[in-house]
Every structure is written in structure tokens, then in C-alpha cells.
Length: 205
Length: 205
Image (cartoon, rainbow over all chains, first blue to last red):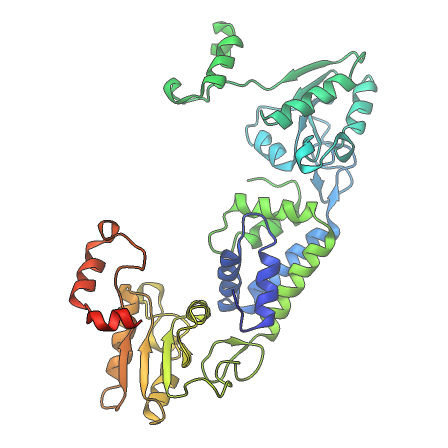
């Protein structure tokens, strides 16, 4: 792609550094900004640079926050001795939107993935183990994605907890609500049979 | 979607104002920026704001340029009396990459589209008619997209040229090179039969 303007080329290049955005899409986005009032670009630019400079991570759960301790960790009405372990803030938002969970979170900031060069030391695992060892936590719920990396991370943390008196659980894997059996993959369907639950529990929910 | 951080929410909102980027994608992009070094966000922000503030449009062809007259219009070795009429700079880049065209361009900045509230007065049509009337132009090549809006725009300009001694042409529509006939749509195939060209011309190309 040859550009008639170095300013345009630079903007397209920077935009195409974002994941899933190729050169063509980047050009489309940048040309869109040029057609809109200057204020739109200003707002975008200000929002991004303010975010990057002023963003804080909650010192307790490592989630993104505008303050030192996020509104979930600082909420006294949340259950204080249950921690849900998640990968990033998107998972916190997804679980919060279910309104089914009243405990706290611990954001790892990723999962162990040797392929991407991410080891346990790159994640917030040490602080999680410390919390678990403090004796104030009753249960850890692992809510990582059901991939090899997710399972590896779960297992690594589980091993680190060796000897610590704490309940651990993982979110249920199975057929989605409203899903048809015939379209489910065999692994999921197999797991949902192995991990079947008493019918009385199911109708309670 | 509920955000734990107003800074994050603002950045996601501004990002999702871009075309084809929904809230979820915007969140993914913004979280990506947060994981990368601050310098990446700085470079993006600087490139976008410099572009928006300092961008110039060539006073002759209305294409995006860093200078008053773009490098195509100011190139004396280009054919000066042929103008290719296009919608935006992406079309200029696409045609330039073929290396088959040595004339000049005229960027309309869009096409007539009543549905989107774009009328002839929103496009650079007046300056095109003036060029055509100046007597220094021999041929206008319409290279707009083959849609209803493109055809309307072509026709509007053609009517405005009423009485002006100038050759007009439109780029050939037909089956793409290397395309199979059976997968072509009927309209294109039909047009390619009506507008067939002498075989001698085809083998010359």
C-alpha cells in the first residue's frame, strides 16, 4: 500500500498495530475520522491517553479501577471469604452481569501460556496464594476459560495451595441453557454426563 | 455493559464510535492497549491528532496530501489532460497500484446518496465541471463504484457537462481476470457480453 501522505501512513500504521485490525481496516477507520468533525478525533485521543496515564489497578483484586481499591473490593455487603479467580476484567464484567455472584474477585491478568511466553511470574498468582494462606478465605472458585492454558493455570495454582486449608471449586462445564444436545461437541456433552447433578438441585436453581 | 472504571468506559465509548467497531471489540482493543507499553498508546494518539490537525487536501484534486498540491498533480511527467474521477483516496491508491494509469485524478469525496443525505453540493463536483470547461482537459474517466449511487453520480456529472467538448468514459465492467464464468452474477455477465471488445484489442492488452 502506497500512501500519498506520510501523516496518513503514520496514523494507519499505528491503528493497524491493534489486534484484528489490518492495514485496510485501519485506513477505513482513519478516513472515517477525517470525514467527521475534528472534535471526534479529539475525544478519542483524550479518552485513550487519559485512560493509559491515569488508569489504576485495584491493589486487592488487580482489576481495572479509577481508585486504589475497586468498588467490588470496597463493598462491605459482598461476601468477603469467597474469591472468584478470573483471567481479566472482561470476565469480571461477564460474571457481574449475571447477578448470581456476591463474593470478591481476583484478576490474574492472563493465563499461563508458554507459547506466548507467559509464565506464572507474569500473573498475579503470588498475591492470590498469600490471600489463600491468610486464613480469611473460605473458597476459591476457578473461572478460567476451559482451554489447555486455563486448565494449566488452574492446576498450577491448585498445586501452590498444597497444604492450605481452603475449599476450591471450578465453574460448571456443560450444555448451555437453551442449547440443543445434537449440536453440542462430544467433550462438553461427555463432561456434562460425568458431572451430572441431582435433579432436586437443578430445579432449585 | 457495566464498567468498573469511568476512564475505561469513556475510552471504550469513543472507540466504539468508529465504524464496524462494537462495544465488545472496543473493549478488547482498549484492554490490549493497557497491556502494551504506554508508548504504543502515545504513538497512536499522536499520529491520530497530528493527522487530524495537519492534514491537507490537494487544492487541485482534493486528495489527501501533506502539501498544497499533491505529488500526483505536481508531477510534470503525468498526462495533464486526462482526469480520472474517483470517490475517495482509497480508489486513487488502488488505481495507482495497477501502474496502468498516468493521468491525473479528481477526488469527489463520496457519491450522491439521498439516503445518507449526501447531495451534489456536498461533493467536489463544481470544481470538476470548471476543470472540464477550462478547455485543458481532453478526457474524463469515471471510476466510481458500480452501484446505484455511483451511477447516479456519474449521470449527474455527465448532465452538468452538457455542451462541454470533452471525451467521457467509464472503466470497463465485466468478468474479473481469472474469474470463472459460472460464478459471475447475471448482470455482470450480461454487461460483459453487451460491452464485448474486438479480440485484437484484448490480446494487445
